[in-house]
Image (tube, rainbow, N blue to C red; front, side, top):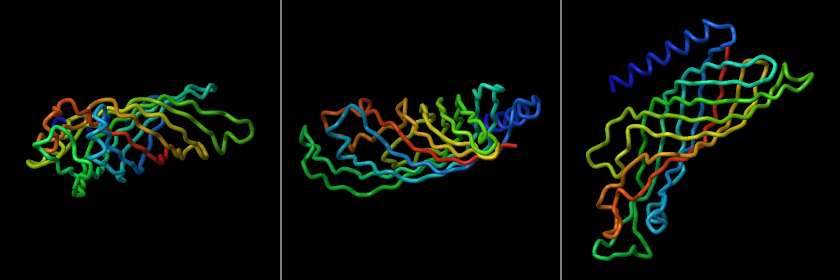
Length: 224
């Protein structure tokens, strides 16, 4: 936890320093909402019983951007405090059977995690004659790295990993050269959690269950 806090502080100082050291850099604040959806890959018979639901979280932090003059190619990086919410139904399995029952009893369980998230994007802003001073459409893509701040509860259904990685693609607009509104979809790359053994049928090993997190993020940023 202390190491992550130090990384976050160093990142904030780096972003602030970069924005003032060079006139090509801009610095600002950023906030928004995310919609998370856990996926259990490669085990179709189990993932339907696990039954994850979309849940809404939030994100807020600071952002810096560098734009190459004229061509509209940009790079940006953000340092965000992110709350990711998850909801799923706990399956009740017949442990004496090698297959899942057709009808699985379940209880709704809500879970959430706090992260320090660092998304990095390459963007292209479209300069449209006459209106570019007011509005600029843009497309973007890049990775996002989220470092978990919470400890796993003793009786957690999901044992969350320390870091989760996603690849984002998205679109947005820049208004009046300062306000940026973006919508992105993140494809989960790595395994973000383990499922406890008691929830899996006897013929499935928990290490074979690849739990990934895909999510939508909608943000607004004000750049100075």
